[in-house]
Amino acid sequence: MRLILLGPPGAGKGTQAQRLIHHYGIVQLSTGEMLRAAVAAGTPVGLKAKDIMASGGLVPDEVVIGIISDRLDQPDARKGFILDGFPRTVPQAEALDRLLRSKHLKLDAVVELRVNESALLQRVESRVAEMTARGEAVRADDTPEVLSKRLASYRALTEPLIHYYSERRKLLTVDGMMAIEHVTRDIYRILAAIGASDAKADKKASARKAPAKAPAKASAPAKKAAKAAKKTAKKATKAKKAAKKTRKTAKRAVKKVKKAAKARAGTARRTGAAGKRKGSAKAPKKVTKRRANAAKRLTKRR
Ligand code: AMP
Image (cartoon, rainbow, N blue to C red; front, side):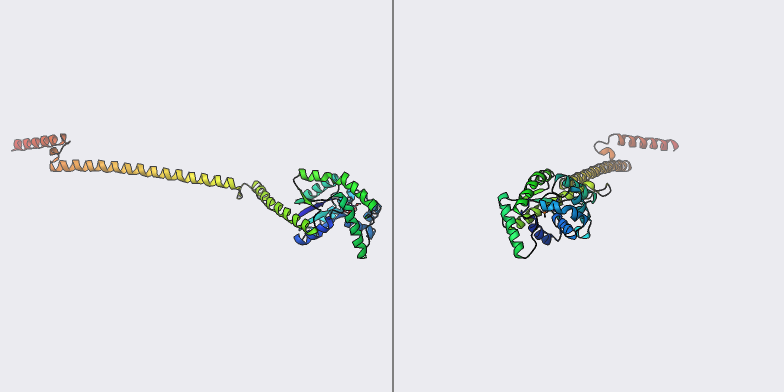
């Protein structure tokens, strides 16, 4: 399962990603998390990203694309992944398409969490309160001012991805305003539906790709047509055989009749009774003549 979670800051992408990775046994690839780790570790990427992130801006495309490309090559991403916070711009989405193609990976779906913007500020405020209560460090960009900047950047640069993935028939939209469990259930449901149609598409694709020697996976109508053709051919062969048999039987019958007629003629010749039978007028004459001649010859010799 390879997914992208799309939605404005505070839509619940991180929360849903956590639930989905457990359910599907895949990994969450959050560019925000990776960048925060890089900032904390003081790596060159972290140093580059630190101020941009704190101000609510976007880290340059080449930086995040590089991070994602490396991360996709890690063994734990082989079983599948959820991209959270990436791509954030159309050029990033195009770069991801190229990356996946080069790695022979297919994206299953893009899940958009649609939320009411007025609810976002409230959500981020309660996230800050919860983190503070747990004694966790609060994100530098989780302030009302920076949030409004992040929202503006989402609208201008990330929202066009909804159209981008909808055109590519990858977009699935879920109402992100429902309770967390409800949103998760909805995501499972739509992903199950996509899984079913993907299986069909794969079947069709493998039938198209099948080498000439093994065209085993034909589509259902093609299979039906082939079966019907086979049946018709079988019927034709059967009819041909029957006609041959009839011809043979007729020939045999003619032969039999001829043989019988010949036998009758022979018997008539031998017994001389042929002449008495109807339709054998010539035979008795011949026999009588021959006999008369023989009698003549006998008389002469005597
Ligand atoms: P997030 O945790 O996804 O809200 O990201 C926190 C911050 O990290 C963002 O406000 C950006 O400054 C930066 N960031 C995360 N992902 C990206 C990305 N795909 N492209 C550019 N900047 C990003």
